[in-house]
Amino acid sequence: MNTALTDPVPGHLTDDVDSQRAEIAALGHELRALVDATVRTAAAPDTLRLVAEGVRRLRTQLTGRRRARAEIPAVDGFPVGVRMYSPVTGLGSPLSPPLEVTPADGGLFGRCALGIAHEGPPGYGHGGMSAMLLDELMGRACAAAGTPAMTVSLQMRYHGPVPLQTSLRLHARVIRTDGRKIVTHGSITTTADPATVLVSADGVFIAPEPELAGTLFPHRPAPRES
Image (cartoon, rainbow, N blue to C red; front, top):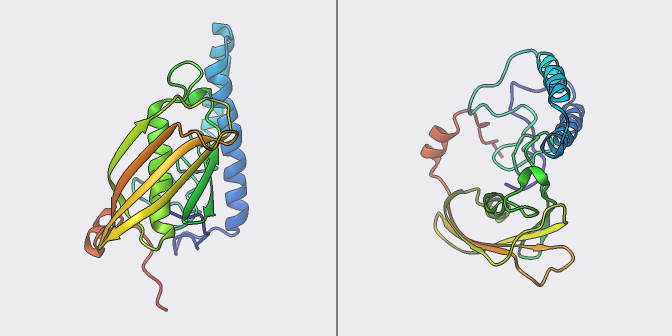
């Protein structure tokens, strides 16, 4: 999906969508900081117990209706727009790096830094995180090229370890299309050394037929009439 803003789902509008997104992003920032502190702490058991109790009390303040599985958040644009809770790009997600996506000649660039919570080998990112980052960016490249699509396969190649707490540079582009089939390529380097590829991937994506898309995403907004 690309990063262009679209209107939230009709019937679920807040009074001020921009304000809602800003507060979600602020909470997401603090939650990511909490996750980082949690996975790095060497605090004593009594301290951990007190913090857990405090987090439990905070959780009870998130009252109101909870959205159901497959329900599109009111602050999201789907299928091409902001995804506030995406584990890759979502500013509201405690799991995301988050990946910042910008247009590039022939594709998309992504920038982020993985934290200790994303660790695989000590000091380096988990290989699954690299796959998730590239899967997201390559899927967004399909949408940016005009055809939102879903992953069929990813062929990953790990050329070197991806360092944590280091500015990363990702690139994804569409190689070719064949009807609903889209072939993509993506890579990860560091910002400081963009010539040295650490991870690369070749992906195949398929644009779902309208009937299948309706089944998979029953809560998606109806297409707008031109």
